[in-house]
Amino acid sequence: MKLSIIGGGAWGATLGQLLVDNGHEVVIYDINEQFVQTINQKHVHPFFDLPLPETLVATVSLSEALNFSDYLVLAVPTKVMRSLLNTINQTLNSPKYFINVSKGIEPDTTKRVSEIVEEVVSKENLAGFAVLTGPSHAEEVIRRKLTLLTIASSNTEMAQTLQTVFSNDTYMRVYTSDDLIGCEVGGAVKNAIAVVSGMATGLDMGENARAALITRGIVEIVRVVEAYGGKRDTAFGLTGVGDLIVTASSENSRNFRAGKQIGSGKSMEQIYQEEKQTIEGVRAIEALHQLALKKGLSLPIIEVAYQVIFERMPINDAVTKLLTRTLKSEKID
Ligand SMILES: NC(=O)C1=CN([C@@H]2O[C@H](COP(=O)(O)OP(=O)(O)OC[C@H]3O[C@@H](n4cnc5c(N)ncnc54)[C@H](OP(=O)(O)O)[C@@H]3O)[C@@H](O)[C@H]2O)C=CC1
Ligand SMILES: O=C(CO)COP(=O)(O)O
Image (cartoon, rainbow, N blue to C red; front, side):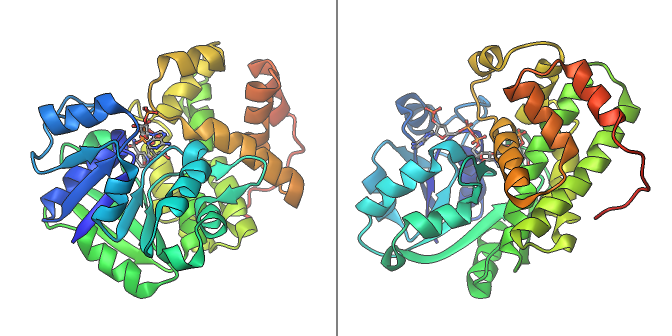
């Protein structure tokens, strides 16, 4: 099969290698000329300094990537998703299958990527939509370490086709799901909880506190999944708890690392200056704070994270705020 990857950063370039390993032809589009040159001339991953297959091709021409195939893998930060999709929609002249691998929720609209795609891409340009998500540090997939993902779509045939496209016998096993909403929401909310887990680590609160935050974070993931109309079970699978486990205590996670820096007193400005790769969790915290207000959801962990990051609440006051909530029985609902 031929596939076009839109966004050749840490994850996009890694998925490029996976697809070439699986025998497919791939063109990667990225706005970053240096990344494109690194892939085409040095055959090296732009972030990890590891070799990429020589047949993996990159381009700075969006139309070249769009004309190359009928499958578009969206691997850009969610903050550029809407504007990029607008450009893609204006450039397209035939229907495409969209596969989103980015994990986020849009602040202000509180929309998921599938909703943005539906809103922006005209019906005649949209052949189908799926999300590919789950616990997957690019740092490990690029080294061909064993990984399990889920491909979710309301179009079963599309999900099954892509399951075989992305799976292989050596390091990648992909499950299908019909719960598109649950899968995409889990991937976005776990980033927010990973930031909080990092904050606790940066504050040196200890492993008990981190375990508590991660576990009560799962409750918040369940609430958000259900608020969007996703299935509760999905939150406990690869795309929810699975992805939370891989992200919420790993130095490979940019969200965890950013949280740690917030916990140790750095400002978001400093963190953004030092981190060259996308940190989705902070934006997710903003969107989830707005969602909680709109839908009357109780998301206490995400709420204090919002107050620390966006309203500059002293982090120790945030901890006190969580501890002084009314005592109650433990429930996951
Ligand atoms: N890294 C990982 O392990 C995983 C990441 N994801 C998700 O994938 C998404 C992308 O993450 P990741 O690859 O890590 O991020 P990176 O920051 O590594 O890469 C994003 C890439 O998109 C490029 N880009 C930005 N704006 C545009 C645009 N308008 N048009 C084309 N390209 C653009 C960036 O270029 P430039 O640098 O010039 O801005 C960069 O090359 C995120 O939502 C993340 O949550 C999902 C699973 C695993
Ligand atoms: O989504 C990811 C792993 O599944 C990557 O997490 P980070 O963005 O925190 O690095």
